[in-house]
Length: 406
Image (cartoon, rainbow, N blue to C red):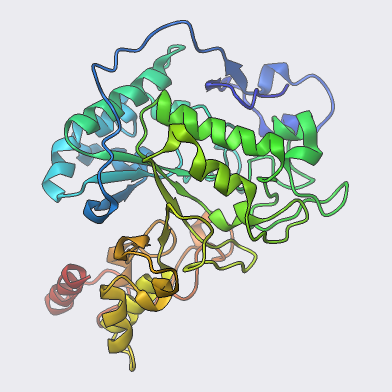
């Protein structure tokens, strides 16, 4: 059984088995299914994307499933970790002063794509580029996830908050040659993936496969997906995970003018949409300051590192701090870009949270079963005098002061 790459919703049977997609035979009873969505009109009540200038944008990165999951959210159990739950927390977001939420992946993903005995929490294993993740909806009827997502967008817009999606157009949950056949592999393996030979997948993503983004079929699917989320779901922008993958050709070599990036930038339906690139990949391609295109903003990893180094009082960091405060002209000056070319951040979903950054000297990621490989080792953190939680009031005061400084 194969999912429709353009399917607008996906249902997961109670007995879903990722393993059943690895073997020959009928897996209809244990496979994901596409859902036909259409033939009705959603009442947007005049809603439109907000088009706030990037220079006025303050982004709050959020894992939607985790944001209201805990009982301390004060929400009833049926709306915790859902689009509806986020609506209830809009007053809190307004009080923070942010202007946009950047939602970690909300495309349908495979929760079984993880080590045995665990659950995929982060969502960076998509099976569909059009369907919202069904588990993030408090409504489980046929149209529930689509309409609840729209309700969330409409409510956020009414409060002046934009919606940016973290999108993963660089790989899928089908993994390498040992992975399951869920959709793309069974339709046209040579078109959808970059292959090293007929049986092995190029792995520029660190996840087992790499989407062949500049193939005409895949290019069209990516642009169609973006247009769907803008036109039908009123999304304001996108943060492209491992965006440098989209500069690679079918043999994996970086291109001077990648067709898919220019397709995205020049599509009239996407005019005014925010495009944010994570301008590197897992194979060493690093394009911060040189990402292709005129409309793209870039996650500035150098800002993150230099600010962290400054707050550890490392030698030689004052000059770099000054440059980062001015929009990193050292990085972007050659393009004569404005300061808002740089998306400045100190912490994100990769690596330490802000609390971790002032509480630990090293990472402790053994619990996920991957031998502490997950996350980077260069965190430039300082524990303020004790490793991990402490009852020392002086250390706690220092940590709180550092958090506010950041």
